[in-house]
Image 1 (tube, chains in turn brown, cyan):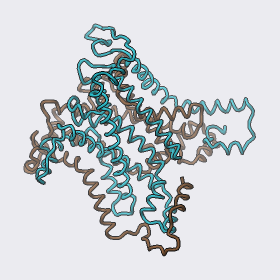
Image 2 (cartoon, rainbow over the protein chains, first blue to last red):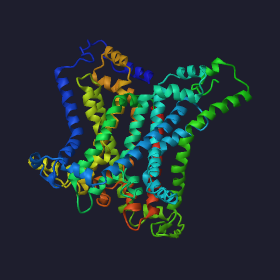
Image 3 (cartoon, chains in turn orange, yellow):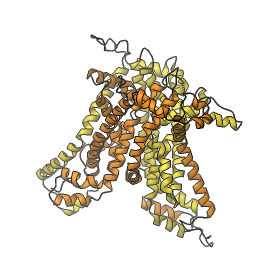
Image 4 (cartoon, chains in turn blue, red):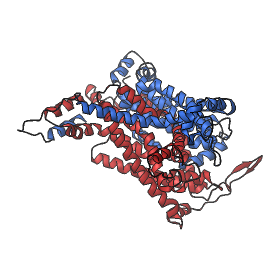
Length: 301
Length: 334
């Protein structure tokens, strides 16, 4: 990378002979530039925030048609939607299902992705290339091709309407990407550490568990986050495979507020806010590691 | 036990020691591979069972006339055996060249291509723009970053419902447009505006990932390159063109590929934005295939799976061309 870049840079037309205009150094910016920068970032943040903020606002309006007259909500702010959702809907059932599915996916997925990522980062074995290809290709699998036969297979195994079905399915979509990401992260950990561990008499598994995993915490955090949001956000399989409404995940449960004929937007908004909170908390906990983890994963492959 | 660490370069090992005998090599190799295979075994097994086998089964289904009326099913205590039969390539012929092929496949195909191209272009340009801004030394950039990543942190299905409320006929967006005396499109009913809205929502959801990945890429560019460029008198645009873009190459080629694949197969946004049954013209191929298999009665399993196979072949062909193109341009990152 660096060599090509350097060549490019040198090849760039330098105004030889002409007195170079004084360019501002990096890090120095005119006041206009700073203003533009803050303006741009502020506008973008606003756009990023608006739908969520609007949802929170609407969730405080007690009537189901309040979204049509947002101005009137201000006069009658209340938490009645929240108490209704918490007391009279399957919210806690959905919460339990979602946590089981997302937690299971995260635990199993991260562990499996970590061993795979480590193997492909450190070892070259026959079948290595094929494995990398398969991992990439599973990203490309449209659910349409799998959902029908999976439905058949799972119903033959009596796994329809169980958490296991969703956990396993979510793992198949989340693990390949996490493995790629973690491979990139492991690549940034010096190989000398492995060698040192080996010299001290650790087996490859020992090296992996005792030395590499603790060092890879930021990468693991990103992978965990990715697994978690993939599992929480999965719609198609959860909608199709979970039949018992006490086992709905949030993605399915939220749809029940909006049927063809009746849309209870107020309850839906309150539920959505309640869902977004644990995810955002989790997000906040890992976000410090997010850029570091993605950096390694993104640039290295 | 000098196992496992050889990294494809392999040079160091070769230089270091004389080539061991054949028996030794096999023994070394066995040890090395044993650990590697033990570590990848869970993934391989899971992928084989949950992806490989259903894939084969799915491909077989496409060669039959399976639907929910003739598949094996259990009603109460009675188990009814499957009665569907093998019909060869009939489904594909029907989908690609049948009398309804334009209405049911090609129009969705065109829209899917437009959808993918538009979304990924927007994701990339907006994501890059924001990443560049966040990479500047600016006060409160951690704060901005947290805010900007928010769309990614909130589950898609939550925000899609939020958009649905905002875009509904007399929702807040149309109220604002009304206040500004601008036309108020029927976002969720009119085909053109449905598509517009879908692209808009997907862009909103997809930018944070691009932004973070590209920000990571930007931070990994060696700052001495910028200094060198400045010494050579390169202006801001030239530095961007000749330092930043080449430096982002590898991360760009990866995230663009992932973006294309993910957008092409994006299910949740369109499915939830318009509800499972409405908006036939705004469905992309994936959601349409789902509709065929699960959204109508009788469920047409065979055609749904055939759509799946077609989708997978499109993605596979595209990916291999993409890789060839990357290789030719020496931009291969993966």
